Amino acid sequence: MKIEEEIKQDKFTSEFEKTSVNILFTSSWLHSLLSSALKPYGISVQQYNVLRILKGQCSKPAMLGLIQERMMDKMSNATRLVDKLIEKGLVDRKQCPMNRRQVDIVITKEGLALIEKIQPALNKIDHSFGINDEEARILNQLLDKFRS
Image: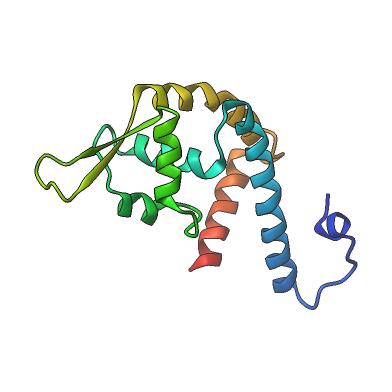
């Protein structure tokens, strides 16, 4: 559906304004889809993002600053998110043996298993977008250019 139909607006002042509105609307739409897909697993989009960051560390520990730096939502409270994931047994926090002032955060086996369990639901969303691989590649290039 066209953005004009989605938000019931006939005209925009420019194609650039339409693009901005379209990206914001689509971001919100996608966030809602992801939230719904993650709800049965008891985690939020931001918590899932932390799990993915830690999985990407390939079993190497991460400090809180690294997690915050890599978060998609820079306004998220990484400390609170990690605390909630610890409560759920999905991540673990340990004092670094080399530097006692440093706290290392690692994903647990349960956290890795949850990511694997969630993946089919997220794949289903990805394949529902109505675009092919080449169109997705072009869209990614345009979005990267948009942010540069």
